[in-house]
Image (tube, rainbow, N blue to C red):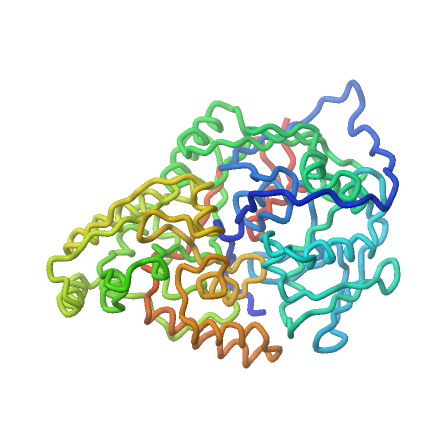
Length: 523
């Protein structure tokens, strides 16, 4: 995989949530001894407090969300087989090495000496259990199962070696299993899905002590192989950006995520610091073409292209993001596998936009509604307000309707929309594979909003191609097709800003995975 600029994303796609629990499974292993106390009675405890946009809807069940905002919570508790850096490098985590045995089989060597937070040893049986769970009948209800749909089965080779079988060629599987986070099988079997969600047990640096609707309180797992430097972690849901700013200014939290550039500037003026990361997600105003009537203006490609020409992306990027990102040209950023360097962003050309609208039969423009989640990302509301202002200059009225994250998830998962478009990104985070978001924005999605059967077949062909050069070329061709068809208004490559109090030390964020175990707090 080609390395380049760091890329992470606000991936609402990856945060898809299921709305029902399955029944409990039968227990197969006895309960283990709880981990020892994390601190002495007289120790001065360090508590790290993080203000996040939202907590996971299903609490500690880790397979219904693979991206932001759920990942901020899950990765304090759970670990995958690998990790992926901002430049796309795949590194060992619970797996120490891997090799492809044959076109449909990979061998993963596992880290020895790792225990779950209840004292049970981690081994190949735990990996097999998770693979079986994610490949069970009906598993596609879970976001992680959909992301790992290429996995067929797993078998124990020895206690610290597992063979993972795939349904198709999966040359990027070592990156994909970053999402194969491991639960303690005995706890899951004893409590079932819903019970485990309330009392999750894993190998990560923190253990859940209390879970409420607005806050998760965790204790350090001092026996973890990546033991944290702080004693406690609090993850606090603060949906409004302004409230997160006030929380860090008033010393209620130490870290805040999903900040706007103007928020960061105000925090820095008050003595806080900041962390800026480019992402592998592309923001777009996504048209619900599969839901709209055949005579709707947005069904005409000339209209969709006109809207792309109408938006002055360079101007709002400078105003809202300090010039720290770029206009989007396609469904991935330059670090994504399959990125097509030959595709240029639509330039700002309002006269060409007007000409295309007139050619399509809408010289006086038209009106459409977009549903937007204000808490969904950095300067999201401001971006769409600027888009609406630019469209108005060519006679098109874009009405912005605010919806909640839950409404957005229901739309993505179940097709429950009331508008003509919605805010949605193309997120290649985790694997950095451009086919990932293309799959979601196609007939292959759960509740498709854009369905071109010919290009969907090419996406499936790409997913089944084991030759990386052939896969890259096919992906580049598909990206060019999406650019020209313009099923969205391409906006910008998403950039993320985090605010840090002066007490925070050793902060790192790779692919929206905060390295909680590295963070320390100054006295």
